[in-house]
Image (cartoon, rainbow, N blue to C red; front, side, top):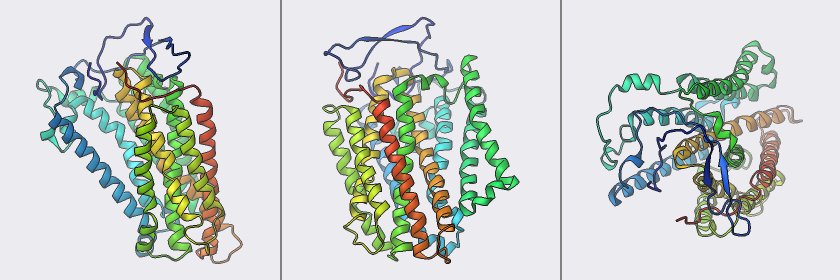
Length: 437
């Protein structure tokens, strides 16, 4: 089996528990790694599905093309997100955006990505990754012709589950946007009806995918994934962490331009510590990930990011950039970068090869949705505090700063809560990223 495979291995499911050797670096004790008994639930895949494991390892050319494609896509995504964040106040003024949708240009990308990631992943499982990705010439061809594509798309994808999950997240974000403009709107029939619908869809989704899995049918997110404590804790933590990082970045932009009156160009220069710190964090984590316990590494990143958020809670508009804003910017990406690296290594350690692709897809989906939800909830708090501030002019820098400060305190509390979650949930995880024979 190729260690570089990223798809789900199609194997026959045995109803009896199987003994799985615990990966090195997880729960080490006296240098003896005890075997675990794990009830492997079937991951329902079509007999017509295929996997990269069914063919030989990709050549150097294919690997290089895939890596360059992923790097370029990530770079473009990060660049567009950064540009949108910096020009947000200017965009809001020129397009006359209402305060309720001020952060939507930032959060809509994460919301759309999160709602469609599992859909496109499910489609790729049916038709193959080659037709989905633009760089067709760099991917290996599928062995054999894929037949009955449309019939398989209909039968092998959990369309109802995808629709229920996406609708719930989209409706929640929309309701948060309405409430952020005026908290009184929560009592309006339209808002209340949409909010109740979004909330009811959450348990309905859980019941639906559980039923699908029990009947041996496709389930977009099988409930059996959440039986792994470490994975569940990491997903919840990354949901909050990505929301905190995106929220801090967005409100720093608004602080610089709407409170301090700095231009977009000057704001972009002040944001340079974020990519620099992110690059340094990734290099450092890559060098020490196999030497330091994963929980310690993640907790250290969260502690540093929490300090950055705390600095923005106490900052004053007249203070120098170097007093609080610079260290806050430099520290803000550390928890997200450390957690992302460790989380991917943990997924490959605690899951068998046949479920790593599915677990990775769920992980990235939750991360993207966390960005949107984090922004939406912080926007409700900021708008509500600004509206109830003592200042008559609600769009004045002083009134806006009241709301921004409340949002920073909210994000700081979330970051601290994530640290407590990981202290409990990742206890004894040990080291990850160690080479295994």
